[in-house]
Image (cartoon, rainbow, N blue to C red):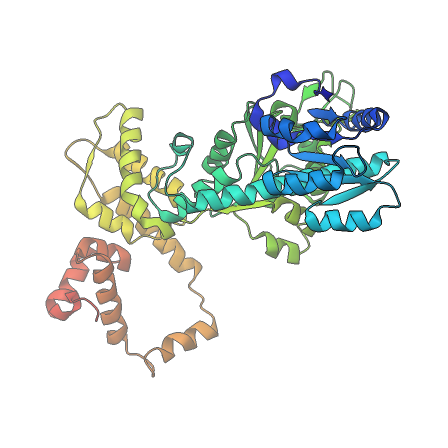
Length: 489
């Protein structure tokens, strides 16, 4: 006899493979009790089978994630079935049930490949916890397989999901393949990277590749105290507090079946961290003013530009929360690390700006790419986009002028200079020792001009911007000493 879960008809084969269970026991009473326990614990897609001879033919047609086998059964024993399943279906996780007098057999089964065992009569709490561990093990096994498959592949299955991310950088392409590898995981994802690097775009790509039917809901948690955070995420019922004249649906409910993206997670208060940790562990939550918990199936993706390990050392970020978020981690390289993407991004932003301002797409001068390649972009892609839109707004006709770019870069470099004006004694000694003695002012000037000219590919205007002087002032120095225009050896 094979009995299907209540919602079997509405679930696709892939999901059954990830989250379904087959119970095998010749005792109908045991099957009924185990299934009832699991249904009460909100497990779905439960198959039951009394005749062990039907198991292998069933598995050949119907993928499942976990098989729970009784050891003593007529026809085929649980141990015999386990050996065959381990050989023919290594992707399936097996848990065995046994009486207390079968310890030696249990040990043999664990060596063959079973991950856990349950003593009869089955304890409900033990059964549920064993199955939860089984699903975690199963998920990890599939993710490892998918990760190897994706990282070794040259192409991707979901190119369209990454269409909004303009890149040809190898590190970024590796990130895309990693996202595909963890697509079906329900575990949280932590995205790190500098401000403006594109963390939300990556989070949206995670959602798109996962194929989740629910919405992508983005929330910036920076600046939210615990009360505001709890109300925003969990919602509240009517009368939950003074002024709560009507109920409010929280962001978690809005992201049901989808993805909840929490940006600036490093700024979250400790009490809020504890509440979010519980949500990640238990998959349920309480709306404000309610004593009834609500189950959630949303996947949580978090992002931060802060050093969380440093925050842990400073006692402002919980270590247990950090490691719960760390199930999957994605670090986005800065624009400084992917300068090969600047031409692509520049072209994309010029097109967007032209369309947005109803202007013909400007043509950039060749010197613009050289100028941009010398800049460190502390604001990353967001800063480049802002530069382009500002320049296009000023553009009249002909080639796109460099002036607005030079002004922005010059102002940023001036701010950096003022911010780092006070150098440490250690950096002073390092600079002085680079020449083996105290360098002269003329030597410093010569070195800086030649370095700037090299970075600017011989363009005096760009080199002058890097040095913080006018082009005329630089030109006068080079005329007096032509060797300054020669590249460094």
